[in-house]
Amino acid sequence: MRIAILGGPGSGKGTQAKLLSERYRVPQISTGDLLRDAVKNDKNLGAQVKELMDSGELVGDGIVSKLLEERLIRKDTRRGFIVDGYPRSIPQAQTLDTLLGMLGKPLQIAINIDVDGDVLVKRIAGRSSCANCGAIYNEYFSPPKVENKCDKCGSGKFESRDDDTVETATTRIQVYHRETAPLITYYRAQHKLRTMAGAGDIDQIHQKLCDIIDLEIRPLQIKTLEVATDTAVEEDSTVIAGGKVNRIKAPARKTSSGEKPASTQTASKKTSRRPAAKKTPAKKARGKKQ
Image (cartoon, rainbow, N blue to C red):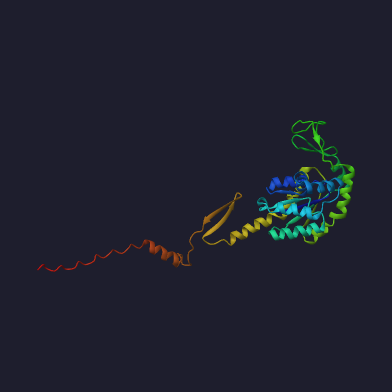
């Protein structure tokens, strides 16, 4: 499973990518997380990245591509991955296609979560998280049931990202429409684009995404297993039951007359044949002593 989640800032692609990662057990690769890690762990690169992120501008392709390549070659991406927040431009999409082609892991589908611009601004400017357990909230759409009290752990301390302001959100959305929206045409031309409305609560959107994945990708995986089963060697077949793959020994074939093949008969005869008795060598006649 190799998927890219597209959508404007605040469309919920990060939240949904995390849920999909947990459900299908493949890693979520968020360029936002990669960049924030760079800010924390790389003094030189981090300062440059922070300045761009705080202003709402896109980080240079060279920086993002390098971080992404280092992440994609890890062992946990063998079964697949979900790319979140990348690509954000046509050149990045071309770079990603080239990289995945070299790794033998081409992208299968790109799902675009479509949300109105006004809603995106409120989602960005209104979001916060519990400083204790990390639960996510939004003052416009999903505030805590009790004001200033986390529903999960009861903590009263909340935090929000420095770039989650109305001004920054507006800038990011403008950049998105200028740089990222053309990706819709790019992936449509490759017949990989799937678009879904991003309205509704988190669970509803998640189910829509799962329906798309199960319809578009799961049948291909099942078909691959069926082909592998049909072409298995005669002596060893594959049976799939209850989600488990079992190996069974195929029975010996019979000829049209109901007899076993000659090779089987020969083997049977060889095993049933008794070994010939050894001949005792004749004793030589001894001459009389003089």
